[in-house]
Image (cartoon, rainbow, N blue to C red; front, side, top):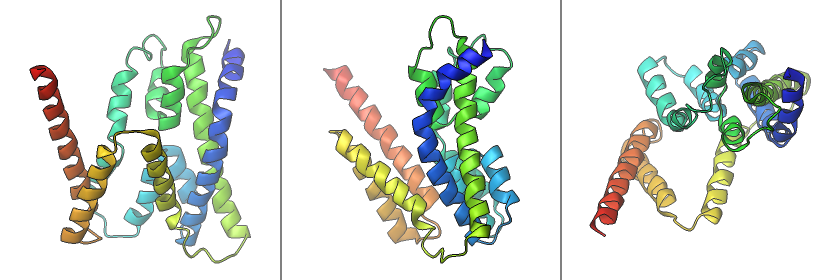
Length: 231
């Protein structure tokens, strides 16, 4: 039963493997370039397992310890997982203790597969979701570990590698812009971030910008709901 679930889950995760290995290696290189020992990217990729937040954590580890700032920033960056979790409540029923790992290991890619793919009738759904989640985490941890190892073996100029996460978000932003007809969320995000950057400076704008973006989304959603009610 478990082997069949594994074989069913594997093909769905292979495309993710390529992306995770590349980005994970970039993360491992980045950690090495900042002077962190090998154990850091390995452990962080195992226990944090939130790609964007792991890149952000690099800078958090290099600045003065501020747990409240770290908590709020993490909550803002990964707030979407609150909605992921709510939408998966029914699917996680009756899967036993596997539910604990499914909750812990949920990432964007695992969510998209487990939320949309219905395994064949002869495949245990709980084990299918478990292996999707496990395989995706293995890809990420392997990429981060490999990147850190190569950073020790291959010596090259790592100047500019910090830009990898910025480049990733630019690509994601461009892709979303091209796919959707409604560009208001993107414009709101850019506008709020620019205002906070100009007012608060580069070191203090991120959390206020995310808070302002969230507020704008709530206000625009409520306004849209009122218009629908009037109609």
